[in-house]
Image (tube, rainbow, N blue to C red):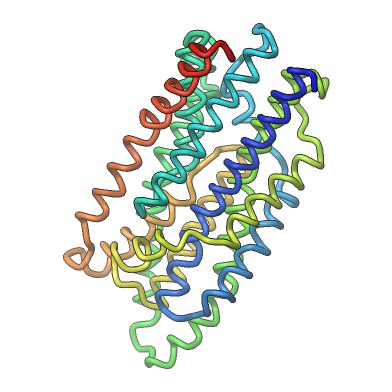
Length: 345
């Protein structure tokens, strides 16, 4: 097999690995609150989430893929080197997903991907090949790393305060309701969970699409940065498969370790996270479903009983967020170093 084709195949396999670990990792974000308040059985929750996760990327454009695919500029490099760099970045992101899953920490696959790609590009070919977007920001344009980091930074804040306000409104509207309302709220979660899953698929699956399309472009298999339909199907199917298998270790963290979730909390968290992630998908902003769900649960708890929020666990999650980009970047740089010393790259 031609060495260039082999690298494209390897990059495709690494995108599959990343999307699978992404779905595996993020399944818990969507099913945690459902299981915590017993709105569905685990099997029902996983099947519902898997179905709507698959629909999301099929029906909602490729704006996020365009953003991710243009995060680095490798067009002036030899195809063999540029594809090898992408493979190292994808390996680092997948490794970080598995590591944080093993530790039961809801980290961000988006942060891991950004860290992995930026880290390996800086080490291998220099920082000028990363599209930082600083100069464009001064001209009022959001692009590159600046756009991604701004979205990843603002979305948890939006999730926290939207959840806070929405829960206050919900408490006010249901102040005279009887306990029977919990049955209605559990039923409503079939719709809110479906919406969150759809938004998650629409945003997260596009990250793999963007990187795979970039690999195909660098390898000369497509003429321009346009996501082929088979790439959409591949990434949608892979992230759905990962979602169906689920990340059960993280369910406990999100369902029980931040705040004790009841039906109203679950509905408000799903509405909040689904709305934020879907809006981000429409404007091409790659965000972390993990971040938004976790921050919405924290905001809901803070609006009701701040002292009951387990802030220690929230700080632990926040710490994981902060170390994900440098952690993934380090793994990517180390991987590239090994391959370079071994004469492979």
